[in-house]
Length: 414
Image 1 (cartoon, one colour):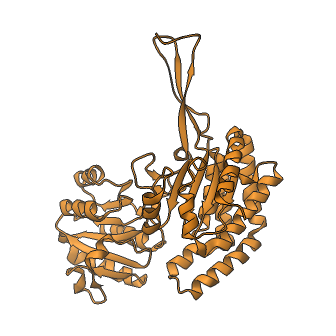
Image 2 (cartoon, one colour; image 1 turned 90 degrees about the vertical axis):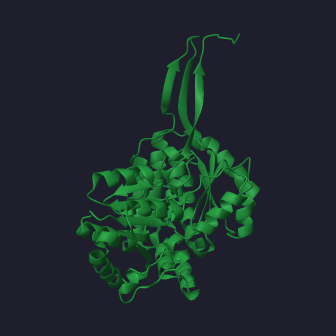
Image 3 (cartoon, helix red, strand yellow; image 1 turned 180 degrees about the vertical axis):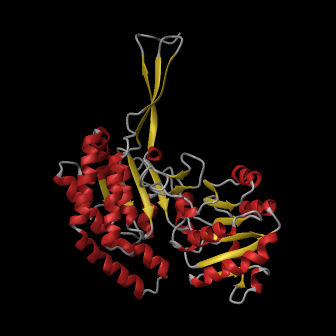
């Protein structure tokens, strides 16, 4: 068993080689890794079944089981994700700017690899593939620490990738995974300065808070998603119903699912019976204010409900006086992930876009679109809700850094 320091040294050495790879070599490695996933799907599913069985025995929620479970379709989607990353333009070496100074120096800004990226995540095995693919294409090595509930699955996936890299003459230490997912090891990883250049946490609020508060390695904070849908008085109510149901139930265990519903008071009597009926049909528990409690089956919301990311078939719901109250409530309870207004009023739409301070703000569309693939730049490593160094879905460009390159012809500073 390697120590974390040894893993860091191996990753650092591998990163030097990865940084030198040209696009064709990286793309070939990604395509080969995609095929290796498919060829080894039976092995991966077998390992995943052990993790899922243990999760069921331990009484984990249905939404958690859904995030953990792999099947042939989901493995094929992981392989497709690697192919998509291979098809994307390579950001490394891109010249972002170039100018000539009065003294004749030519100063350019170039996109370069991070080096070694550490990723601490919970029990979504697809993150393993996304992280490997994006980091490799971005010219970096990666050290992964997944949740204990998915240890066998993640280890099986990483074994497949390492074998594929080795078979193609590349350093297998481009990707490594901690075989000890304990909190102590995670804490040690957070202090691996000198080896890990940046750390990205991906998971629930507790995990992210722990990394942000305890890491001495620079952190890019991915956010939890207490996402809101505000149905304005001018909303097309058919569209509003579709958006709310999709945002809440299409996949409730993910960070871009709607957790809080706000309804304008002028349409409450019409919309509340319709939306609650549709939510109940989807087995969603509605926790509402006094206006929603007029509907049988709605249970009273507590103060904590307004700020909770459920990741489950639960939604909080309340009536607001108008757009001012909606914006103020979002400011108070939002995690700055994704928010939506359903409206036919141009002024209200623009106010919502301008005044809601979240990474992604929607007009008349489901929050479920907050995703790198949906936005058209392939797989992503997470949704950043901070303002430095990246915000929103983090794709290839967000996994790089820059350096200045300066061309001279003998200039010296006076």
